[in-house]
Amino acid sequence: MTEQDFILKSYNTNKESGSVKWASPSNIALVKYWGKKKHQIPENPSISFTLSDCKTITEITYTKKEAKGFSFDIYFEGEKNEAFKPKIQTFFERIETYMPFLKDYHFKIETSNTFPHSSGIASSASGMSAIALCLMSIENELSDIQNDSEESKDFFNQKSSFLARLGSGSACRSIEGELVVWGKNESIDDSSDLYGVKFEGDVHSNFKKYQDTILLVDKGEKQVSSTVGHQLMYGHPFAKERFEQAHVNLAKLKAILASGDLNEFIKIVESEALTLHAMMMTSMPYFILMKPNTLEIINKIWAFREKTDSKVCFTLDAGANVHVLYPESEKENVLEFIKDELVSYCQNGHYICDQIGQGANQIQF
Ligand code: DP6
Image (cartoon, rainbow, N blue to C red; front, side):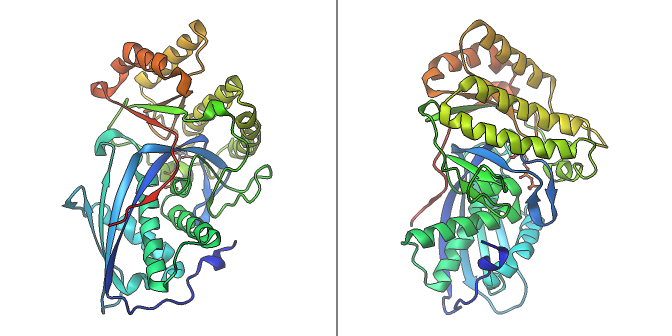
């Protein structure tokens, strides 16, 4: 697939109006995307667990219009929201070539999250993928395409992921479950820089229903956005080695997912999380997104592993919150550990229990 394959060639605007609705999940990267080229092309491949319960639910109502230009309104949790408009405007500009009908309709975008707004959980992955999926459903309605063949479903998922990527890189990994790879890598067939692909390799039963409890250490606005952080990888002294390392880690993880070796899984996942933050600390200007409680939690997890034979581990995204990952078989013990020893480091004692999920769902009316 190339960019050209995603350009919608013909459609009809006889349809006056319609409504579509999708629920799309968040995802947590195991090998991290950090650094991008033009047009949201990643500098290195990444792989993520799709989450199950942390989702954005978005409904788009489209109505035919005459005037030229983009026209849309956004409602977040029932209230009109102006703050999201510039991001959506940029998104529409980036994807217009692939969806020429965008200027023929007015779009009412109504969106909400299943997780608290100010939780510090990045909603760009679930939010942008939900919009991309809605727009793809509209594209199908305007082209009279039924999504019933395997081929058309594959195209739908690929183009949704392709569009979501142009909204926010990590969003392209939220369309499908349970594991998604984004970025060309030799060890993964069909992997692409343009969109995420479902990981089709063997996955050991140790990883079935893998748990992710998100400890909300800091719910405030981040001092440095991911977009700025990615830019700081240009001319970063360790960039080349880091991008190569991600390729190696992805290939290693592929073998680990098949063998079910949880000790090796922990090594890759925790090293990836710390490397991501090491990149932030060694860029110019440098910055730190972890908080003292992030480190307290990491040390507690290491101490717990030392004294029990638990395979619990952590990963981080671009913030202070900690994702605690563990096999389903350890659910009871780890939750007890979290309540006894980690909750006190969470802001207002807040944490969210989630697990690996299957990807986005269309909601029928
Ligand atoms: C640290 O996808 O949020 O979570 O493409 O600029 O929207 P943009 O960035 P974004 O970056 C996410 C980075 C990360 C790692 C990851 O999810 O792979």
